[in-house]
Image 1: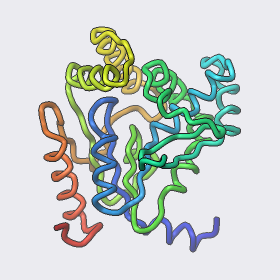
Image 2 (image 1 turned 120 degrees about the vertical axis):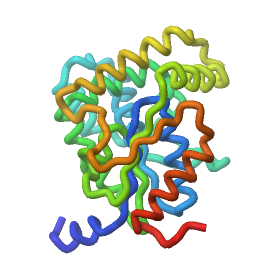
Image 3 (image 1 turned 180 degrees about the vertical axis):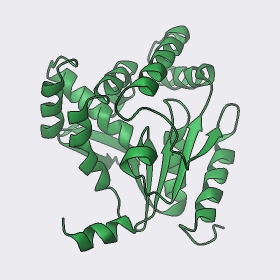
Length: 238
């Protein structure tokens, strides 16, 4: 990649929305991206996709070299179905529903601490930066992947509310789960993500933190759009 191309790409505005699982960042990021007409990156889906690929291959998730090799050979593609719903394909197979399982989330959290896996996915994430702009949601978008982002948001919510949200989502999809079990998994994942040596989950120093506990999604979207407008990344938003 030549210097002129890197410079041009770095001039494309980026909004990063980071936060723990269940904080609402996925829903809010998609709505903001749709409103702005920007591209959308769900970085967590990339790690979940690698986790699914590794589990399908029977790879020990504790074997870092094997998981890294899997990440480098796995083909991940995002596409919309006939109804306009986002789908994720891993090596040509639609794994969208599998990505939402708690076992997949735990696998993604485990492999996200692996330097080789992260390196394999960094360039893929950078490639999503395209005109007119990008909304990137994840756990280290503002701290590691796009530290030069014009606007950074860090969403939070109580563990109890995040567990309730996840429980409702899974029940609606016909997945039998325990609310207490989900809460325990969320608390454990928060601890693991916040204390890992590589790219721990934390707000960027220049990020605006928003607590979504008990707040309507529309209100959070409006607040984020106001932040984007104030950053100068877009003209006044009507």
